[in-house]
Image (cartoon, rainbow, N blue to C red; front, side, top):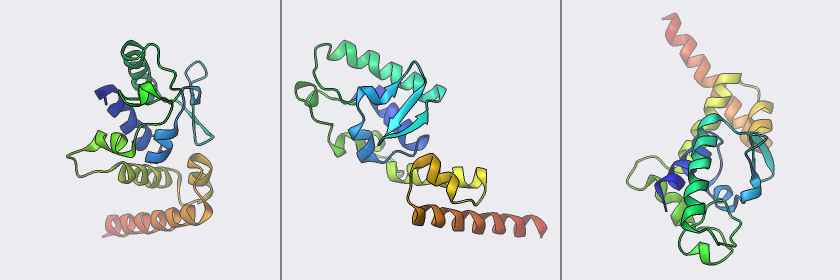
Length: 156
């Protein structure tokens, strides 16, 4: 895939905590540039400046490379431009090929960062990322433990 697509994939995982499968399923209509919103698995998210720039770069590349494609998925490649299905999971994970990080790690780190920023309330990450209650509670527990450790270190 093009470098623009890889950058967009990284932003979707690292900023929006999108799962690789959700990234593959994204449709052109999920990206609302005018209202600066992005729908990931039906959950609306504000479209930050970095993701907006990366999406616009990717859309420009996509339009130049495959101007007549009927594929409505946001991310396409030379195989999927000729059909209507999503790119493969291998194509999406290629954005981090050769790196120790994975898209899943970036997603989890982003969710934990959000919990640390907004406190140990499990409702916040559940609302922001659409995660289930049990996962949100685990993040809240991890947040409390990390904050407790930081407080203990600073008091020593």
